Structure formats: C-alpha cells, structure tokens
Image: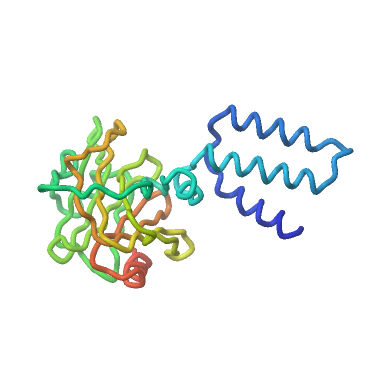
Amino acid sequence: MDDLERELRALSGWLETPEPPEVAAQVRARLVATSAPAVRRHRWRYALAAALAALLVALLPPGRAAVADTVTGLLRFAGIIISTSSAPVLPTGSPSPLPAQRPVGLDEAQRSVRFPIRLPAALGPPDRVLVADPDDSGGHRVASLLYQGGELRLDAFDGRLDPVFFKEVASARTEWTQVGAASAIWVGEPHPVSYLDRAGTLRQESARLSAATLIWEDAGVVYRLEGELTMTEAVAIATSLA
C-alpha cells in the first residue's frame, strides 16, 4: 500500500455521516465508472481522492470535520460548533442561565441526566452542580460541575444529541490536541459562547465571554472544560476523569 492509499484510508475514518444521499450516489457512480478493467490503478486512486474530498465538503460530519474550518469557517466537533469566519461580536450585559437551569446535589444530578457524571480526580468534588434544559420526561440535557467559585467549569452532555454550544473565535488559537487516545480541541483565548436549544435556536441571551476551553468526547459524552488554564493543565484535568 503506497502513501496515497494510506492517507485515503485514514481520511475515510472521518466520514461518519451518510447524508446527503445525492452526494453518496454521485460518489458510488464515480467509483463504479473508474473500476472498469481498462482503467489504470492510479486513475482509480485519484478519482477516489476527488470523491472523498467532495464528501468532506458536503457532509461536515459532527465530531470529525476539521477541514470544514478552511472551507466554510464552521468547525463542528461533537456537540459544539465553532465559527472562525468573522470577528466575534462580544456579548454585552449579564448572560441568562441555560434553559430551566437549577442547582442540585451530585446524586440528584446523576438521576437527572441519561449519561454518567464523572468527576476529575485532579479537582475532587465540585463546589456546585447544575442541570439544565429538561425534556418532557424530565431528562436534563446538560450537567455542569463548578469549581473555584465558578471560575472553573466542566460541562457534560450527550454527544449524540444535536449541537449544544456555539462558539466564535477570532484568531488561530484553536488547535487539535489529545485527551488520552481521543481527539480534542483547545480554544486558548477568551471567546463568546452561546447555547443552542433543543429546537436548534441560538439563545443569544445566554451569550457570555468564555475563558480558554478544552473540548473532547468520551464514550458518547462530550465534555467542555473552561477556566484560566493552560492547555497542559486542562489536558491533565481531563485525563483524570474517573
């Protein structure tokens, strides 16, 4: 297997969303056309490369679309959308809380959400716990652990749901990193963050200036660690989740 084939096989692992069907049909037709015995092997490889590039632009799969940043200025990673297409509009005034947000004990928080709440061993028990945005059956969408008087925050939510947070980043201070074996995104500067409700509506009234943030996903749960941290410090806290 040469270098191009290895790159294409690695690239195919980022394509997690089977839609839109018309693009998939075009790719299938392209591959069938290039598989005729008379076509040389190198022509098949480059046709496949073109097809995969088209899919990357069209699909923008949640959680695996780094190329989207250079194409559209929108980077979708797990349940968070990051925009770098224009200078962010800084929020004014006091942000509203997330929908139906309320403080609860840790045990009640675990009963209120449909995913396990894990504590970072590096931080210990939180000062406060919040849950927010319940559905009709009472299952809350977001659980937040607050530390250091609320200056350090760990949000957790089901990564299989629709996007939950929308971030605007002006500079190139957004980079890929690792939390264990998982890919993660580090936003290394303050930036506006807003909440996207269950209907997909951007809650502008919830907009606030967020500190540096680490975003990663583990076992279907998305984590967002925010605070006055370096990337090394944030990764160390993230890897201590128990």
